Length: 194
Image (cartoon, rainbow, N blue to C red; front, side, top):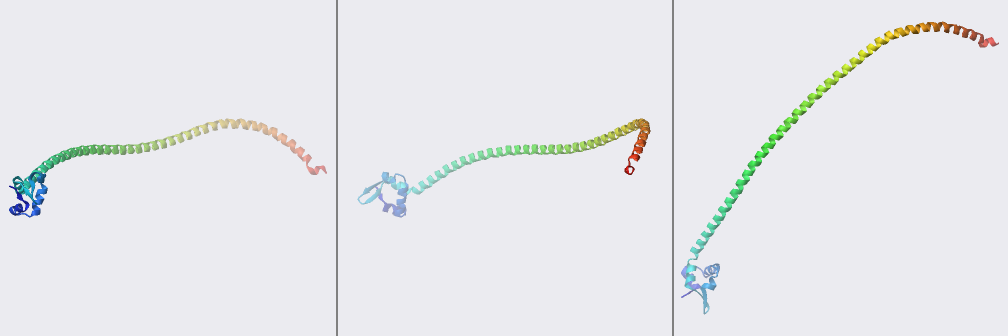
């Protein structure tokens, strides 16, 4: 025979509201374990047992939920651990790549510095050589002008002798001409016309 909510609340030492909350929290409890007798709602024996063991059942359900959550968490932790392991491996690989790139960059910079130093050294050598070349060229020009000067001096001396001879002959002729012109000028002066 069933019991009413009031009888059940006295037996379980709970309030009517607490009993009603338990009834509402169990799925399909009202349709399976309750029926109306006059103005009262009666709960069958199986329903009474369920409500009496509600705390135990609730604890068991909670424990099952906790275990399921723990299993899910463990699986998720394993996945996260696996992901973390993969990410850490990738980070290690990237660190190695960065290290290699850094070494390559350092080598490139050292080569560039060495090349710059060598270029500066070569420019210095070129400047020295161009200075030597200029001084050599100027020395050669001076020597060439000195040789030309010496040659021209000897040539000039023979030329000057020839010129002097010609000039001497020309002077004699010129002197005679100048005398004639001078005589003519004297005769043609303006005061002579008066």
